[in-house]
Amino acid sequence: LAKSLSSTPSVLDACAGRGVKTEQLRALLGPEATIVAADRSKKKLEHARSLVNAEFFCGDLSQLLPGDKLFDLVFVDAPCSGLGVLRRRPEVRLRRSEEDLRELSGIQRRLLANLSRAVRPGGILLYAVCTFSRLECQEPVENFLGSEVGANFERFLLPDPPEPSWANADGTWCTYDAPGRA
Image (spheres, rainbow, N blue to C red):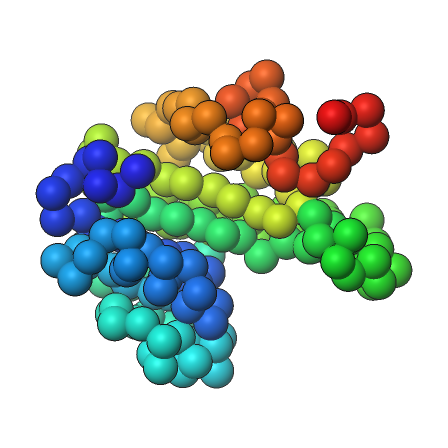
């Protein structure tokens, strides 16, 4: 997506964690791209520094931004309940409550509202979570798009997923095996 916006794309990898996705972005976009890996965890960013050549920002991204720079792509891999990894980690469902989902949804909403200010005009704000709860998937996006700050953003259709069964009618992808899905 970033390559389609600029020959020398600028990317903010928000909630970058240990930098695995940041490293993939660097490999795809090349050394000329500007990539900022941001996270609230200093320890995770220390690991990322050993993995990838990027700029780094440590702070609460629901309130702060890494300077006044605008980006072609702001990728928000938001903190979530992790319910999407139940197949590999079934204990996750025992550790999460409905209150956790509400709290995480609030964090996701604040992240979207704040990080949207870092998207250059014509740029892309890409939101991802590894869960399937409506409270964490659709609701933060719907809330953002219905807000004053989200009014200038519009949904766009993702390219076709690598696995056709992942496609949802609304243009989103869902990569888990849902009941009734092939």
